[in-house]
Image (cartoon, rainbow, N blue to C red):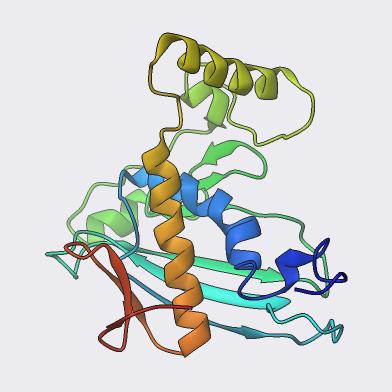
Length: 218
């Protein structure tokens, strides 16, 4: 690594996993928290260095699609589409969760029935529409703050206080180490898919990310 790479190490593979490690891990962490699942079943990815021709080796534009659900039931589950671009900031940062009951918008901290199946649509399919109520995430969580503000605010202080108290009391933190392991699996799967151009999976027995029938290595 040269002197110019040290302060900007996130731009260079293999010193950093780039967008996946710097940004995606935060959003994929929420996916695991909400769903209770440990990692994706598979991942595919594509992208490249389309804008910033400055010598970097990590992409400035990247899209990945992760498949989640029970390992023994491929017909049940959901997809997570992650996209990041460094050439235009229109739209800001969005984190949206869709279901046939509506939508959770993490950028506005609101839950709504937006886009959900109507009662007439559900009836035509022999189902009952289970639309989400219109409320904030804080209300749904019983007043717990759900924002990801990293500045000097009460939420950040409470986060640090939880960690310090957990150390003193020898108790598990609100976000245990297993959460970090889970999102590490997802980001390695994303990188494996992008770097090889193949679908990545995870071998539970070996605890290895697999591509093309082999363990992914740098």
